[in-house]
Length: 106
Image 1: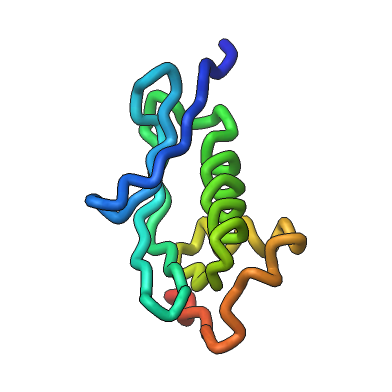
Image 2: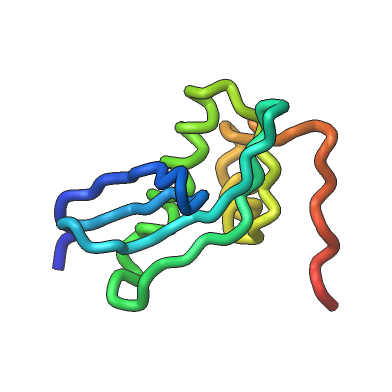
């Protein structure tokens, strides 16, 4: 089964990016935006009905491309976004050099 029409929207009122597929919410990334031009990605979630369709990667690429377009530095507090950046080094330049990743739980 193929993935339908996708749209990524910045829902600024809810502080989250929403990826829809054929109008249905499929994935989201919550964030906080600081006036200093820094966006912190807090949490990534894919709706169960859409898991396994590559939408996590699509939403990660979309939010990072948006940050690049807007000239924002990124703080990837979300483990998914942090891991995605580590596998896609072309986005490493977006990471705020003053940011330190939280320690992973034991």
